[in-house]
Image (cartoon, rainbow, N blue to C red; front, side, top):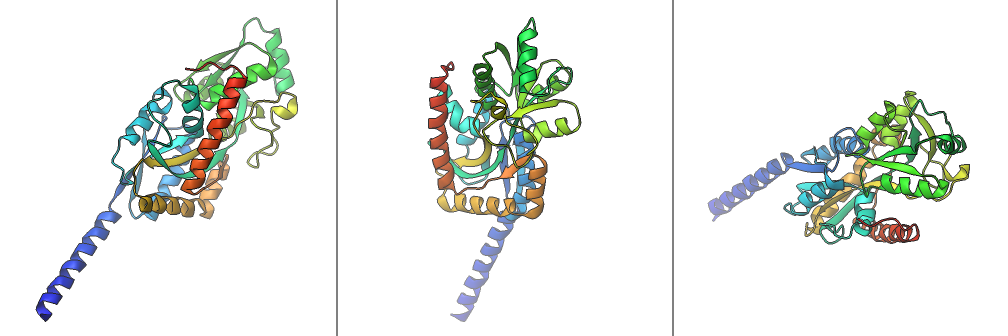
Length: 320
């Protein structure tokens, strides 16, 4: 009897040791629906660097751009629901696309389970260095004197930056040309080079270019100034209200991922976001940490879908 118990205990010990070893070697894919170098990618990599050790494994950022995030979202929705594949989605993919597209190949709350919101970003309207304007009044006056409309880039059709362009058109009553790109990074490159006039870009990608003197900032989206850049006025306070709507990033897992797995991912994310150097790096990039519970993120998605639907209807924005 003693020999049998000893053998059993040894077997259990070996199994537990093998399980722990397997967990420590686990690789988690964090799919970012944009090319490397954009704001979502920058924040995802700051998070992934610490999230891997917090989960006892490795988190690899995988860039999968295309179709305004639909390719990446579809890929993760079909992944095995075991916590090994996650998506780092933008608020636009979760709250705007579902009400802007008549036929979207995914549903944020049917095909996914929220893990946590990660950050909220300020968004700046920046112009090329050759544009003779430093504020909204000067930009509007310059646009009225031009023979051709201002060209404003975005991260793609249906992206939140595209809606900012449409809202700015209506706020200023100006004819502007929307130029969609495959991500905000190439749009910013063309603004810096003077190939397009302006772009709405999240702080992680716009502020470094402003600080380097490569673009000029005109104002920020929203009704309140950002703690990350309190010296930059809002577009609204300059006399052009209506360009509003927060930009944020969050993590989601495929639907049917076990609740205990979601909870573990949520707790690990919150712990990482609370680390002093992570907060400092995010703030330096222009992002403010904003973790939530899975339930709070689901509520946020539903509420913002309703808000954007109302904006799209009231401004008669075209459905896709």
